[in-house]
Length: 92
Image (cartoon, rainbow, N blue to C red; front, side):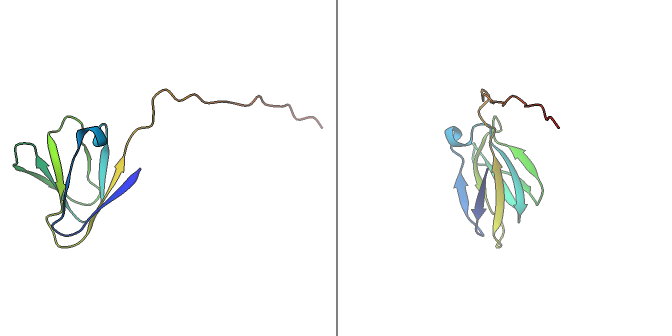
């Protein structure tokens, strides 16, 4: 997880390799999605969630004057091995 902070009017490019499978949640302010064809996309407010995979988003922009924050969540590796320790019986 990481937090992206966008000052008023700021724009951050979405690089596909870095944002693959990323899910964003606006935690403060408003964020506008900029589409690949250069057209402005929807403006999302606080608590709005969005996927970036397959959406055609090329940038995130803060359309307001106040700072906006987006929590970026990416899934963990799918093949994670968990080690468990054998339970020792409790004797009294």
